[in-house]
Length: 287
Ligand code: FAD
Image (cartoon, rainbow, N blue to C red; front, side):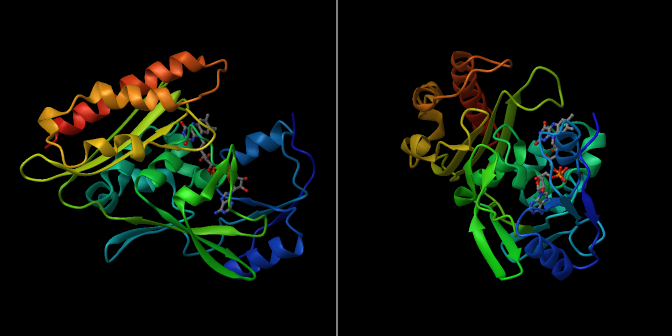
């Protein structure tokens, strides 16, 4: 099948791109890596009358440090994130997760901004962004605003972006030196979207007491499932004394995942419990 006819614009500046989006009245779509949008258009599941291609706008592909944060430009390819020493050092959770995104050819083209804006609940970027308390810089012709990841994902494939906005930058706080990270997922074949994923990051004192914990699951709800509240009873306790099965069961008990051709709801819940236990066990071994 071929895509329906559309107008194609390749602006050289962000101002021009924003102007094109504003003038389209919100009907034009932004084209980033095209790894989702192009197949969706080819199947005619989306028929935007116009595409605004971001690929010729300079300065949107970068990874840089800014004080306590790492800044990632929206057009940064998954492959650049995967190869970044800055990301490996300061955002090890993202570094682990990005290797699970599709296959190298797709990672060569797919972008941070595209993945986050598409907001697939099984995708790695949204899950990690919520776990790491990322925020997103959104621009439109009217101005700029910053939205926290936890407020950005609204429902299935739906975000806080208005049709005239472009996600231009991802800001992620660096992990503390006392933090360790584990990202795990289960899928049928490597490169497939996760059936369930777990993004876990923990901070512990030298005495082995839990100081901070982030635990977010993908694939179990329309948006990343933040299990921070259910993991909170671990805070202040010695890692050696914790029974992670209790945490896994508490989280699984709160999930209402859907059933589809990949997995039943019950299987997803069991998987979530098992992955949480495995992630926390692996985290404990890292201290
Ligand atoms: P595009 O396809 O260009 O755009 C996607 C959507 O986001 C469009 O609606 C577009 O208008 C909008 N958009 C893009 N950029 C912006 C922006 N800066 N601001 C506002 N809106 C924007 N992903 C995973 O996470 N995990 C996987 O395991 C995985 N497996 C895949 C397997 C296959 C076979 C394929 C084809 C894709 C897979 N993907 C997977 C998707 C891939 O990661 C894409 O890169 C990603 O979903 C979209 O990024 P993109 O840059 O290609 O965006």
